[in-house]
Amino acid sequence: MSNYFDTITEELKEYFHTLSPEIPDFIYEYVEAPEMKRLAGIGISCGTDHSKLFHNKIFYSRLDHSVGVSLIVWNFTKSKKQALAGLFHDIANPAFSHCIDFFHGDYENQESTEEPTTEIIANSTYIMERLKRDNIKLDEVKDYKLYPVADNKTPRVSADRLEYTFSNGFSMEDIWEKGEISKIYNNIRILKNEDGIDEIGFEDFKIAENFVDKIKVLWLGWINHKDRFLMQAIADILKLMVEANLLTEKDFYNYSEHKIINKAKTCGISRIKNAIANLQNATEVFESDSPKDGVYNINCLGKHRYIDPLVMHNGKVCRLSNISEKTKNNIENYLAYDMTKYIYSNFDI
Image (cartoon, rainbow, N blue to C red; front, side, top):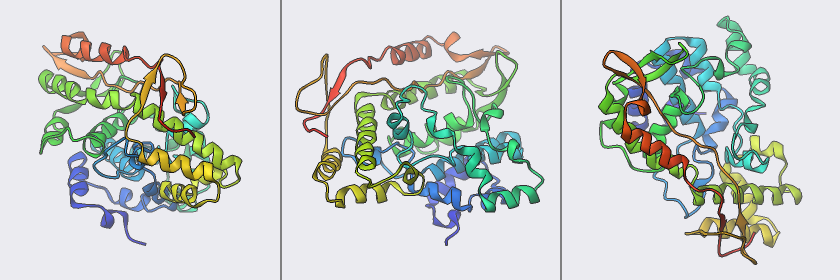
């Protein structure tokens, strides 16, 4: 089997070296665990790679994201334990990622898929042999929430939140100009937040303000009508497949997204075949104050994902929204987005 770093594009290698000029040997080694390599078949964009509702630029996998998070953590902490916790943070991610949270009814927190993380690491002979060799305990790498540079609460900036903001900006959208990620990243430092805890922040007010202004399009993309519609539709198609004994929930953690879609498209059940075909070919959705008869409707909230970074200003560490009217307005407008409408299609599932 090919080494992961031998299979990625030159552009992705360049991006990774922006996140960390040094890629330590242990990342090269641990990323080859079978439990990590499985993530190569899972997109970071929660199913949006598979419908004409979206026009993603490239397929960016959960494995790519995990490596990026690990490199950011390593770059700023030089801690092997923290970097490994970052590398493993999505090891329990199922096919279609947070669509499975919708499957479980966890629309707003989107954390139901994190539960098997410890079990998956503990059951990995490959990983556990190397952790023992490196004198690292499972408890030190099983939960990246232990390390605030790796993960923290929205809207604070963590390696996880920063990486998917960068990568969504070139995989789902096309918002970065050449060299822009490097310019932004080189301005980042570890600062102490309001609670005296380490947090990723910015040295320059203008760079921070422009960064937030640019990524607001991503925030909306993660909760807009099309995104919530697609995630719930995938969840409901998967429910149909489980009910028809075409899949089990364990298969979400064994199969790639493409394998599951092909299984739906080639099964002998017309309802499932038509549902996946209609979803893949859909180009628009509609909103209404009430459900529409005879078509597929959804009505659910989503998880707010946005950033209000720390920044150095006049010798002090400030939360950007407290000193930038533009940032404050961007956040308020985003949080005011109406998710109460019914969203429907011109087909049924």
